Image (cartoon, rainbow, N blue to C red; front, side, top):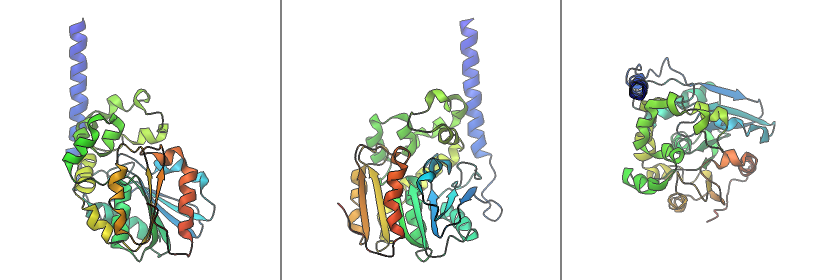
Length: 300
């Protein structure tokens, strides 16, 4: 009886994994003309914000803390290509492709007016820098939270030898195989305590293709030093948890000399998901970016 049960479990496990693999590779190719990102627009205030989530995230990542924003804001929440409820094609998922998909939504909703602030977390932080670098006239300022800066796969492997599964999935391509088995582990039993239920549920809405290629092409292969140099004079707020296990704080500090108009804030004791822990504190730091005073004081 035990043998039959064991065989049944193995067959079910293999079946789920095979389905997950095929779900990624058999998806249609990316069609930028006919595939539009899922997004929501909230509010009609004059202060415009574009919010970009991290790897395996969705626009719901931001929603728990939006009550801390003033009514004077208009907010554009976007599910990145391959994540949340956005299309998940079998495609490149490189920086250019991600930015092109975001640009389409930003232009459609009129968030290219020059007075907009872009806020990005983790993967979204890299895309935020790339977006502002490509369209500096669209945005007045940017804020990046938990910015991952790595020099390649070996640096990530060294960092994550003792990391938790959740932090590892955030930036380690070795976890692409985990994506094959979403139905088996995306349950309440495995949800980290600091991740809200709806955010955790949406974390399973990607394919191994969208996860692995985005990680490889954007987080690992992007020359962040070169990307950051394109916005060196833009007002930028960098927010980072001192205990961030997914994006080493010391690697972000290496980028600080590039910027001429920046402020660096450490959240003492906070991890990679400091926004979920203290959204009001994060928005309180971002709100002054709307000021007409264009010079920030760099705090090292």
